[in-house]
Length: 124
Length: 107
Image (cartoon, rainbow over the protein chains, first blue to last red):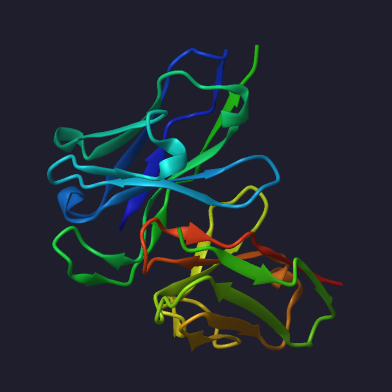
């Protein structure tokens, strides 16, 4: 059974680095992209980017370039999202997800799995 | 970036009625579109992929259609548990984009 389990809620001051973890299990970690999606309070879903767990390559949306770092550790099937210098408007719930569509090798995949979300509050 | 626009913003209906939600992409995305349901405090749940394919476990009351730039999600025989925010998502053109959501209220 596929599971994505995220680390707990965080409260940070502006400029204080934060790293969110996404532990995966139940499938081959290096076969499927891990995506990160943000949801600000009362707002919609915003795709941030993805990481290829096989080689570590990332594709990050323009809005988040230079503001987030996506990494992974294949030894424990975990993906990470780091915000090196968050601002108050980074207050949001951050989701990791294995989205429907395709694997890292381009094969079709119609299944879709999400973590439970990690709430980040950035406040002075 | 491919913009995805949903309408209406809010829909209020009664149990047993039929809801029709719309999603329009700013450019041709074929059928590479999904619909998600999100309830308060929960992660999004995939309902439809490639516009018209129901995800595992999704009731047949949910159906999707469309191609190119115009898409729809229809929910028939509405139940109180269908109250949620529904998002469409395009995955044809980088970056992935979501619509702003339609809030469905069942009263």
